[in-house]
Image (cartoon, rainbow, N blue to C red; front, side, top):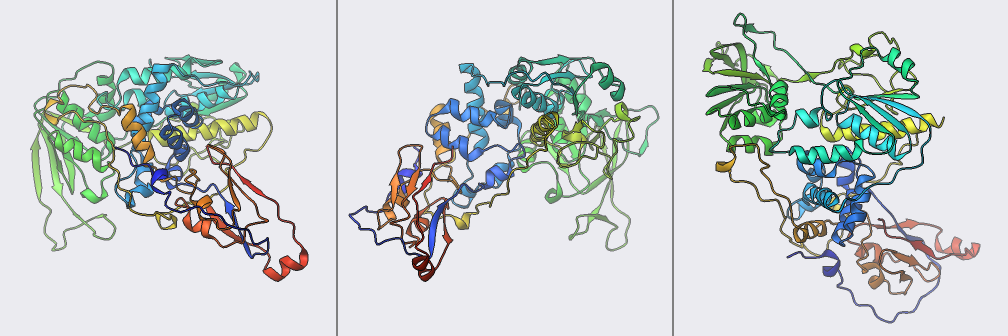
Length: 568
């Protein structure tokens, strides 16, 4: 059962006290600081805010606040790698809040209740979005909310990009994906054109009379390996395999499969190969476990499902009968491959395999803008953009995997949102206003009264022995579990109305304004003792220096009540 922080914090006695006047050297200021989870979220969600609403049972309000930043809560609740949880201060006490589980719960409830977002009146402006992956769909969603007309051009036969073709169904069921994508595509002013590749961007812009363009072309082209290869042999590209399986095909891979690579796509390909009937799946990775780009939970899941990982191994040859690998040593400081310390020749090994799957990375196709000299690539062969996501060509913006940054679904979603807001400012002939920097609240800044242990709720996983098909392997939380999990949030840097400040004030200078309205400080009574700040568990109060006692008395400073409203 959940242990509610707001109940356990009410440990102070409120008595009858008398104010001593307005002469002081500091005053309490209520702040809304940056929770580490919010800061770590690539989509820019106000996680603390919607968790607080969910904890109070205001699920629709929580969903609307979440959708302010992210159009895909049900998708992200399942497939995001939740870096927010890696930054959660709660982990210093017991376990991080299962943020993705509550996000999934809200996304699924929205579908059941048919909740919808509101859009502003039509502006008459028209924007072209190239690509319907997470970046393109996110951009279209936020532009439509702002009242702009959006035309999406998609080269393939189906919307979604890597959402649709790169994430296996056991992690993201197709009906969930189709539902949330459909919510975007059914918004006023949004149109989708599949099998409609843009081959000449300048000409398309001219013919369509678009006021702005967003390029969300992704990185769907597989990188190749310049190795010795059996004549005529073509390995399977991991992206192509995942794409085919998403379309309902079941490629024959044989009994033994070798996957080359160490990222999350490689993990998905290896786990998919097991589900396609491979009895043995080997993953060959050139570095060690510590340097593996795949997330630990993905690696653990793959190994639990029977995937064997060969670390510090480099493929030197591949063909119909398998691969040859060379075992290498790593520099302990840099992790780079180095020659054997004793000068001996590296050990070699041959792995017999019926199929070889390459998952060594992807790159983007920029041929659509090759004739536009203002659009240039950076050193990493990605589109160069300014802080507003605009390329060198005026009115042409870009985001997602085709620009610099982490190539993740959530990063792309955040790029689409930020670019949409920059496009909106551009269409209004204004400059985009960046978010003001805010102090990040660390665990040592909190004032926890005790270690309030509360067990983390997680969805039940399908037993490994039953993971033979592509059904979803993790179930969602029920309402009781989701509300409990939301209640584990420490509300870092933001008031949750625990009343500690009210109880701690010996001068009766703090007044409760009612649920959801926060507190008011009467500065004619406050002495600046700081007891309120010292008793605030969330570090939502700081003591701000002001005039010293003599200066304050001589200047006859008039101190007016300060009103503070709790952050939603």
